[in-house]
Image (cartoon, rainbow over all chains, first blue to last red; front, side):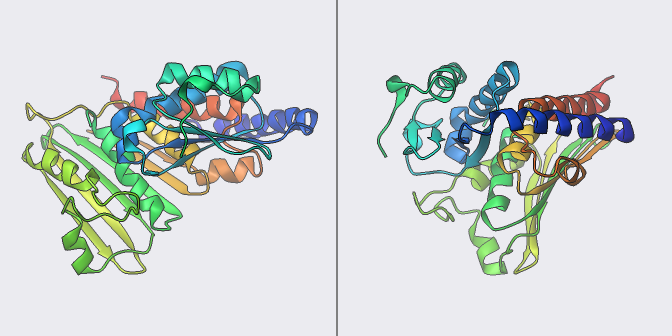
Length: 122
Length: 181
């Protein structure tokens, strides 16, 4: 790996990202949290998170923070994905396969409509 | 778990939960020695010898939601069924190192699997931690310390689309360079 060339690419990427951010400053930050405890991993949460990252990359979704969390005690509902949009309450989704993750990204994160099929109450 | 890389993801989470801010994951595939080894090392709060002895018990866990923790017992059983071992070294306020070995050619050894997704998910999902990834296979090595990436990006988060793309390619290319015949 050519580190210097790679870091130059990265500096350019930073500038690109900052330029895009200036334009989108008005809309709030969205946080997507994927459960990655042992139960989550065994249920396929890694692939769920991968689907989220792939969606962001393919659809150029900005202003999104993706984080992981441990077991929240609903192991039978894993993989679990949570969405926090600005000041709204956190919505928790259960049994989120990679395909469902894509649907949630499109419906809730991008279009603002909660994907009712998989919502679970904590 | 069907892949060693999923166990790695699971164990790395333990390091995150004990307040580590620097975690290193080292994988060593050595065909000459017929072994596959991985070492996860953190600078978290560490454990005393009494606690270390207890964590192999599935009824001992640090999580508060359930009273069963299967990550380490399952991994230990998998390693031992492949002529391997799981060893934990730790010191309070210093950190913990977990070493797992599998016999490389053992018929029951699960594949390493999608290690690229494991590393990518950890770097992005726990972005406040300095992740160091070292992958050796025979005489090839790939090392990635994400500190230099985060220092260059400064305030740009890792979940930006262009950054995800950059990181994904960096990790995939590095792993491919080690794995290719």
